[in-house]
Length: 165
Image 1 (cartoon, rainbow, N blue to C red):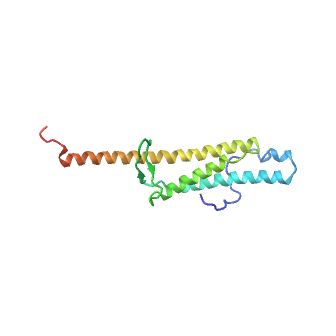
Image 2 (image 1 turned 180 degrees about the horizontal axis):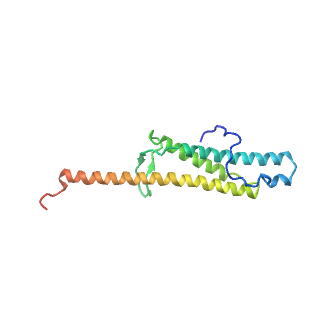
Image 3 (image 1 turned 135 degrees about the horizontal axis):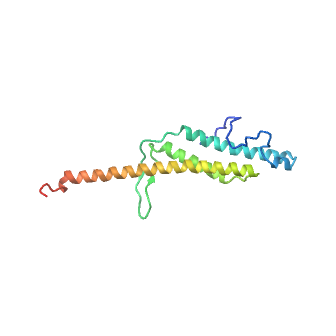
């Protein structure tokens, strides 16, 4: 995720359809500019994170192949090679999503509406992470099948196949 500012006036889509309703109930609880500014800043931060994630997910192109580091020891699976140039966009997007998730998890909702919007934003980022992880797992499985096929044919052509049987 870039640290660029998001476009102003962009709608994140978490606001109520009732336009006469205040953006946040806590605005009515205090006339203090500090609390109003805090509410505005919190909503802006939430909107900026969601806009950043959506923009990045809309422009992200899944690569046709990834470079993996084989699992060692009792690891459940391979690691994505973070140093590979082929993986650079994938790893960058992955890091963007995790940074965004950390930011969202660190936010304190200032109202019930903000709590709902924050929950939806977290679900959205988790959904993108799930898609990314499923994609990587599918590529790893495909790579494993290819290696197994190559081993099989290597054995066949290296004399491992008995023609007289």
